Length: 419
Length: 175
Image (cartoon, rainbow over all chains, first blue to last red; front, side):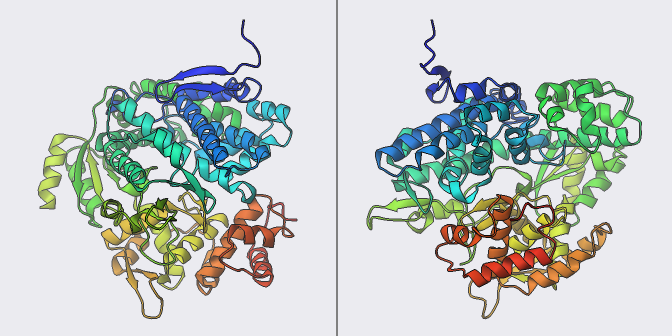
């Protein structure tokens, strides 16, 4: 028999046991909106590159909750904790911070609806349409707004916000560890137990207690960026999926879209309600792509088949020329791909939802910093001021341009044109 | 992909072709976006106010493509002045945006006259109003968020007036 006061235990591949109080956190986990996260892949199309990368937003959200709790335990032990009323709201904000992610996470973010996942998250927490709102209100009528305020970064809850979202936070710690494990990469790992055992709070944000731990974390993030998040094959499939959606939407506007699953039809119009949005997941998009692979529209069927049967576009990494798009379009047009808007993709780091740490270049530059204890002075400083290793990877942003072309001949001709 | 760049370039063009300082540019794009200019950049609140990592990276990319330059200018300390190049202007001509309200030309001209300290305050006040902070609580919230900046009551009042006059507060539950 389950004792109602005992927490529910989840076995997690990254953190071991994750323990959820039944009267609060577990009730949110059991809502249909949160269960939907089981069907949304954390890394979008990454499993087409690293086949193990099929883990879900559900697992990541539990992991962020667990790390938030671990951070609070550490802060309590050094008497640096936020006030007790804020802790429950913070725990729930950690759990819910990604609940507004749509199908394929970042790969289709902003494309299906024009709104980002953060806006949908706030709506899922504060709208009376949502089961999450009902449960939060039953626990405490002020909780929906307090949880939303932490996620937005409201002024009364800045520390909890920064524990969940900043340069060094529970979200990043979990996804680096989880994504490395799932994709089989060893590069995203760092000594999380020691990080948790030594961290402190400075300027209302978390700070590392040891220079070498901060370096390990920053390097883990740097290598994960290049080997997972900005991987050329994954990015190619992300953009291909966006092109499929763009074509389907254009055909729909022209009243020429021959097939589409009912659940995706609201997304072809201008407005999508919260309940319509929360009704779809990766499986609806995959079903749509399956149907579109048999469409009478040759472009839509070709692009969909490429996604479904993993026939990636060919990538060229090149320099930043302002006429690069025109050159590529001319090549693919001559090779028979007349709809050039759907057969030439350009990609640069600004389109990637992840980034790596960089340091300031001007006095007033305000990008958020990573603080670390300088043991020689006992003061907290920005990491690059004491770490030559960090300066070497964070001193300058690397700007790459990738051009994606539909086949090997196009790639070869394009390369020749660039010479 | 150049469509995103084009809107940032248009804002720099409306500001007279250059903007002195990354903070100033960040805050102007944020405020213009909040007023309805369809920028796609995602802003998050950090220690010094709303900031977009995506916009910071786009500036690096636009430099690499030759659409803008960033240089230190005499008398501006370490602030980097971001200026439109001829190639940037050519891109703008290619991606005209006739649907953009003429109101933005006036708004950007107004904001380009302000310094980065004032723009930081404007962006932060607006962010706090969206978080349901009342105008009465504003000074205390600003002081707790930005203890080093020493913003005065007069500056905060002026920021609220500016936001009201420029139409930022329409539809916001301001009390």
